[in-house]
Image (cartoon, rainbow, N blue to C red; front, top):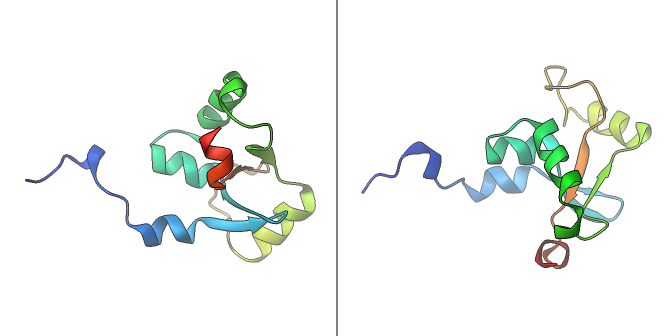
Length: 99
């Protein structure tokens, strides 16, 4: 049985490649997480802000200017990034996701 593309399984390698260590936490940048869900990054961030009671307080944070500069210098965020504004980072911690 072939599943429609909206139900396709995302390879673990693709997810693992989008996880970064920032501030001592494993996180995914908002534009990577939004891509996995098939939405725009601003829509994802807005949904988290509107539903704060569903997430732990440290679930998502905006990168500092220095953190953003370091990621850009490492070519993690390309010049063709959907936005030139600093992305948010969402925790990949099992504890944060389960609360």
